[in-house]
Image 1 (tube, one colour):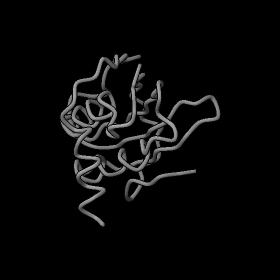
Image 2 (cartoon, rainbow, N blue to C red; image 1 turned 180 degrees about the horizontal axis):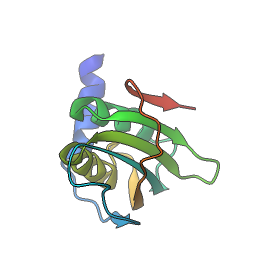
Image 3 (cartoon, rainbow, N blue to C red; image 1 turned 180 degrees about the vertical axis):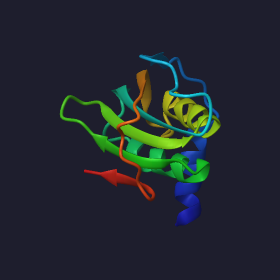
Image 4 (cartoon, rainbow, N blue to C red; image 1 turned 90 degrees about the vertical axis):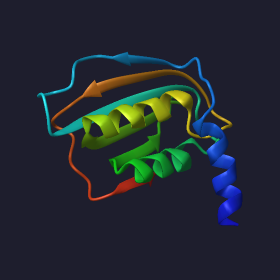
Length: 123
């Protein structure tokens, strides 16, 4: 059963997406860990987006959370090295779930984000 899910979500990794990434500010500091939050809009709820976002974060070593918002968007917090976060943001832009259609990812770097010990899905 695990390979069925892996095959399904691997379909989303290499596809093209017209999703736009908007940065509200620059990374904080020149090196070390960065903390970011992102709001993702489009068809991102009810399509396995949170599950596949967690899969991507775990593969990249990003810590944080992902949750659905009442307005139909998905909220993500991520903590990691800048290179890890760049790849994570790209996965969010593509929509890690093949059923997702990402329109926009709004990224804000925020040092006030609490560091987590892993990456988790919230309801």
